[in-house]
Amino acid sequence: MLTLAADIEVLARFGRALADPIRCRILLALRRAPAYPADLADTGDLPHQAVEPPGLPA
Image (cartoon, rainbow, N blue to C red; front, side, top):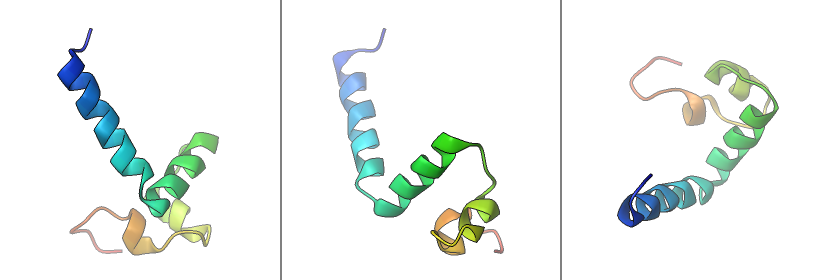
């Protein structure tokens, strides 16, 4: 079982993730089915830069 401090940290991180509209769109897309970053960007909803890991060519 997590401690109260760990629970609070998990909830805070989750809240930050949901505060970003692009991250919300990624989470909603992944809820339907697994996808590669390029597939998420190719749907037209997300720019490639938003879903590609930093440091890798697009």
